[in-house]
Image (cartoon, rainbow, N blue to C red; front, side):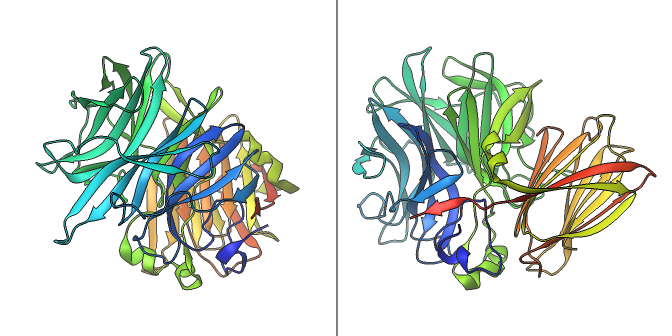
Length: 466
């Protein structure tokens, strides 16, 4: 059951988290607290522009049935009066602690950032505690997005911050605390950047996931130049694997894109027992694209990705949709494709599954004539092509697998596309807009004469209650 502006939209989104109204961006404060999943997110409740940031709030017991909660944090204190920016959550002594960046613009127009804390006894009402430490020396005012976690081995709390040095290069700062109140600066999280081919001018939304044998560092650097088929978006989200020891993270590889699609940024992860779950923002801060997105005239903008589990294998990140999403499956259709198929599915929410253990033949799979996935089996290359709503021109993103494509799982949710290849080894997210509102046209062509099975599930929307 859809709610808010999306309910009456010409471009309804059914199983992705959207705002009631206004602009949604970064996921914040992801946590499972007292058996309930809490998803906070950056929200301008009054407009579809990047101002007036609050923390929106939605919660669920099963990731399928959701409940809207009142706004968790509003810009109503001297240290966050111009925006409650991104941050994270952690449970300390049965209380939910939210760490965030407060944005302030002074009378001269200068920006100031404050790293702040808010505390709750129930997960819904929060008491602001104010700034937790001084602004670090040697850095511009672009210091933000605190992510906090507890390290059992070291018996301490850690906090990472995205930052920009005064020489206009990006980095991540590390802080350490025994009580999550008094924090000590540990300096740069990464002191050895020799593995990194590019640095950029600002690192946003850092997220360090420390596991037994290695660590995964995900961040969103700005100022990365396109290299071949990589880094084609205005801003990127990348990951590194390596070791976290003695208060420093040492990469063992160059950065790789988390998602090679058109819209993906600022993901955040949290632990749910033995799994790591991540949400990302399906948007990019590119004014001309945002202001012209068709939903703007309806008073809402953007959504989060579906929740994904994260795991590492051979220094490579794998992302899979959480198992709970199978509960959304309704009608199942099985198509036997003899080289070509053109069909209409009478639903705008779909899950498409194609697999071949020996490797798929080359193919083109088109959704609504506006979004096409092309695979070349001769070199394992993939191309995602869409019609851009702003330029009205075709644009593409490309990647190359390390081995044959053996399976794909493609989620289509109205104007939202999330593609998972080879069990989540390669992932691409995108928005696309077409005249097909309550149905989807699928056209698939295989280059080789072969019989291929394609499974299509119609999906139910999330249940969202007030």
